[in-house]
Image (cartoon, rainbow, N blue to C red; front, side, top):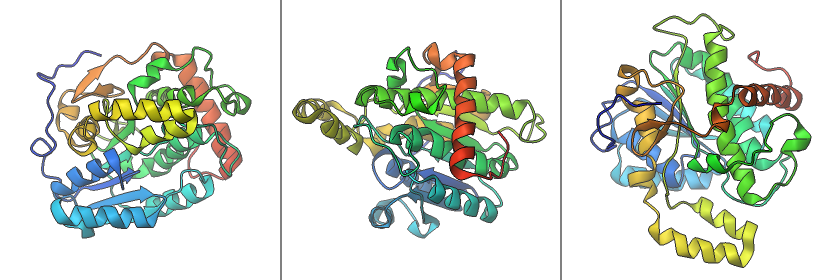
Length: 328
């Protein structure tokens, strides 16, 4: 996708517009890139930010840090959202959907990194559950509020490592998903899936599956992003997966990685807040640092693969959660 935008710099300190009256939901917002996203949103005076994470103590630490430098931390409200539990994620999603009268941006930033294979309480590969299925449910549950909010945004934090997803990925069954393909491939597969899901979601919205769509309402701006090579706690998950070699690799690489608060959150914040998204009609894009829409891998543009992922996601959510507030 060729960008019509001149330049590739986006400074969240100065380039985010005034956010007065706007409401945001951010998953994984208590540390690393997620903290940077919440901090810079708060810096520009929103009405409310819902910080979704699993552990309240981490959220409290984040709010204390936000209050020191970034703004009125009382505008940031923590909601428990354990993405490894679809039941708990569902409870949080439904409560927010009932409470919110507007939602200007849903940022799906939470995720497991390169780490060992595990299964959740729902019997699913935790990488796919946390990075894809649970946040897909959050997106679809909150979609009606997003659809009635003018120029709302849905942003999924992917990665350039989606390009290294194995060619064997088909997204056709739970047996496939619950096969340990190695720590790196488990992660890469989810980053591919996030781009595919975003693109497929746009197709289904445009087809009228989630209500009437016009030129001015019904279709949020939906994009995926790559944060760049950034220092986060996710790298330590590689130590669990690869032992001593993982520790050595992390120690070698981390000094060369960028800061999550200053640099890692730039593409997401551009996609979430910039008026240029609307002006340039940036929809279904893959955005790399700082603000450059670019082509993802050929797998990420595969219509059959995105359709398979959509079907599998539907089967997972219906079987594990039961009655949904939407129809896929």
